[in-house]
Image (cartoon, rainbow, N blue to C red; front, side):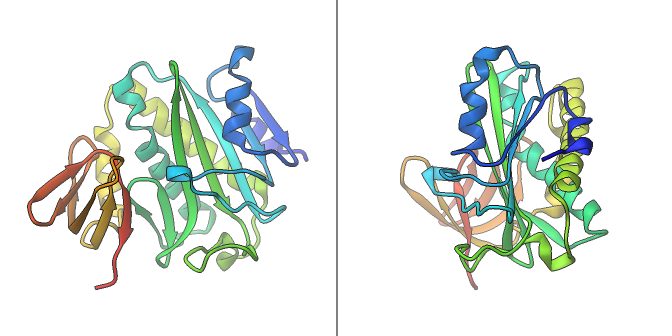
Length: 243
């Protein structure tokens, strides 16, 4: 498949009709001395992963799976890339759909009317970060009930969506590297994060959980939850609870 708009946005774009995982494919190619922002794109993943080892449904022709190679200058900046990507994808989808009412579920999902349309997964490999992004273009038969797609707004080509995401990701990333911090993008995250104000359950990496109300996002990008006490969480899998 030709992706001229997307290819023009990055120094190297690799399209695969089907792959086990675009993240794994990019990891396998790390020894090839790829330039920063090299991108792998596929219309089908057979073994895609989300957070905490969950599977990411990716049926042929109905979704976009893409992975981008980044080489941040410090571990502190690397830790901000999931949130940076969430902002960038949110901007891209709002632009493509001419003002669609998307929101960010902290830290790595894009929602449309409360249902998931995009998931983001960042992983550190030496000095490199592999940033995986999955977007639902159309409804998938095996998708869970809490998922939705861009088809709510009409038909969009893979090239159109990938190119817009890469454009926004590139500008946001360059601003991050130039400033040396995430401060300039923090207000956008706070304004568009639907987790704030929600009663939530946060699953922590050690298996414990926190239940309470998400009341804000700290200067470091951490979610702040008011429960039996106030928590500031750097990493967690967050679920919005029905009130």
